[in-house]
Amino acid sequence: MTADDFNTITDSLWEILLEVFKVTQGYHIAAMASLLTALICASEKSANIARACKREEELFQLLIEEKKGPDKNKKFVQDFKTLADVIIQEVIKNDIAEKFPELAPHIAGEESNKFENSLGETIAVKVCKTEQETAELLGKVLDGNLKAAGLLAKCIHESVHSDGPDLQKLTIDIPIDTIGIWVDPIDSTNQYIKGQLEDKFKDGIHTHGLKSAAVLIGVFDRNSGQPIMGVINIPFHEVDPNLRWRGKYYWGISYKDINIHSVPKQNPAHDQLSIVMSSSEKESIKAALAPFCGERMYYACGAGYKGLCTILGLVDAYVVTEDTTFKWDTCAPHAILKSLGGGFVNLVKTLSQPKDGDRGGFPELQYARPDEGAKQADKWANTGGFVAYRSREQLETIINALCLTADTYL
Image 1 (spheres, rainbow, N blue to C red):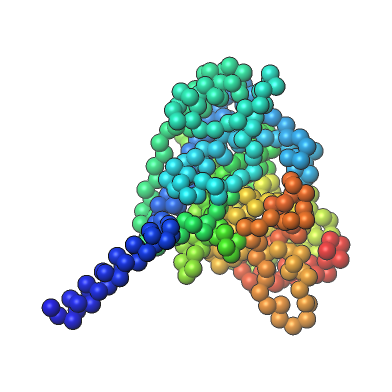
Image 2 (image 1 turned 120 degrees about the horizontal axis):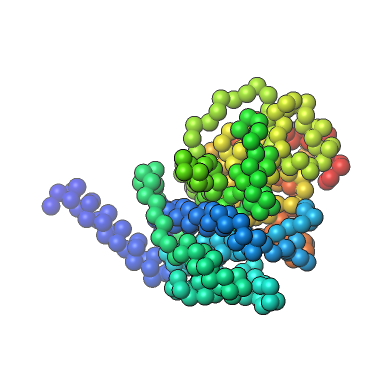
């Protein structure tokens, strides 16, 4: 036996012993490609459901229930929960948990799975073992509309596959025991409900409409709270030759020394800073940033969509000063932006740092711990606002500009 043969055998034995140790210690791992594939497939099935619900206007009107009490988002006069929201969230949870049972207790989202029909009956929506059982359950929610329930059940139980070649590059494993998942089943729900199409838009950015609706699935490390994987699916990306909606998804991974993504080549940089925000943002914030942006200050709906605009290079940054976004809104875009070298920093914490000398590291948003001082509905809010950025230089320009108005909201 040669020395090389001996070393090869030794290395193999160590690999076997390591795997035995992981099993005996309850250390569960999964191929990152398998987990990402599961997220993508869940997002694609979710997009199918969202489109199915929009195809039948009469059906869609049945799917709307106004949120009340502590579930109501303080940003809107009317905030809606749809059955599509609830179904999509439960489908994502079910499909991922089927492949990775250890993750089941650690998948959370925006919506409660309780839905009230016209008879006042409160029903827990879930994915049943069979398509027929799911259809029967949904029939109760839809006041006996078995045709509609059957259509939704078929979408829920259909098989969706994704074997994109990019996933073959992923060869690293990830410990399942240390990760959690945030789900926003349909971000920008109000725009999804209204169903408007925006014919005129500026520089590729839609201010409102169906194109701002998104399915968001973000993975984070439960120890560090940092995002490590994200999928954004736009169900209404474009209309195909048959006048039917077709979607598009984007993904990104930032884990240890791995930073990869599916984002296409970025647009050339502009000399002038570009920012997207909500049209309801404070006037003092708009005024502080206007000198740096000029005509390149944009307004849009949906936290996920505004995050995607930053990811795609349509803008340099996305600014929020209110506490109106939540962990499920930002986890997925944060992970993708991080894989591109950017991130999401807590605005108030950043502005509270010493203004003289080197600021040091900017405090990134984290996803594992709630805001203990907040009310129940706001405990998972991104308290203090944030700046989603593409480069450190651009971030510093924005922070320096906002320092002048910090006393208006710190």
